[in-house]
Image 1 (cartoon, rainbow, N blue to C red):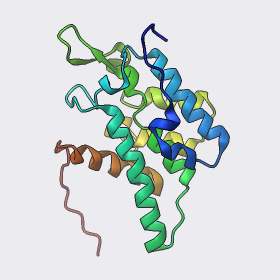
Image 2 (spheres, rainbow, N blue to C red; image 1 turned 90 degrees about the horizontal axis):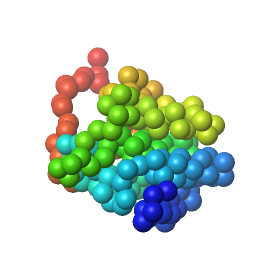
Image 3 (cartoon, rainbow, N blue to C red; image 1 turned 135 degrees about the vertical axis):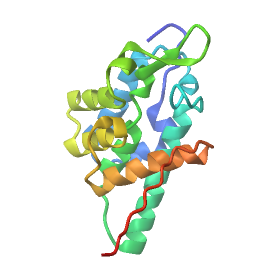
Image 4 (spheres, one colour; image 1 turned 60 degrees about the vertical axis):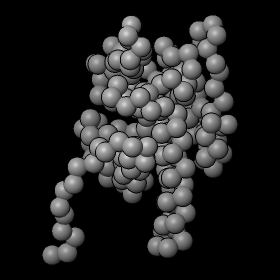
Length: 188
């Protein structure tokens, strides 16, 4: 880690981490955050932007998605009497955008720009790679890759669909309109 770079306490940043029941998965989430943070060119976590077009702190976005995922899971379980896989949902929420730590950096003008990795790979590909290297379950990796249209795969589990929607909804919460409306008919 670069001299002067703040260390991160993943559990303090994301209280939802403690809700992951599988200790190996919980540890893998922390290790992935630590690994990508060590690779990051940023000195402060709050300096990492949501994207090169959205200067809002990625940390706040990740916290919003994780908190919303747990809240929606609570509501759906209470109202619809379904059980979501909390380990998949929470680990996915904490990992869908972790590769943003290494996908961007500050350019000479102080604005966010893509790193070579960010220019070369679709968003979230490196996070999926790091997760697979740590033995993270494929259903969590599916959440990582399918949350972004750049991932090339539509979400096919309830947990992945929820994270896809919450990722976009959270960006709307801090003032960016990124939704496109498609008319869908749910009834024949």
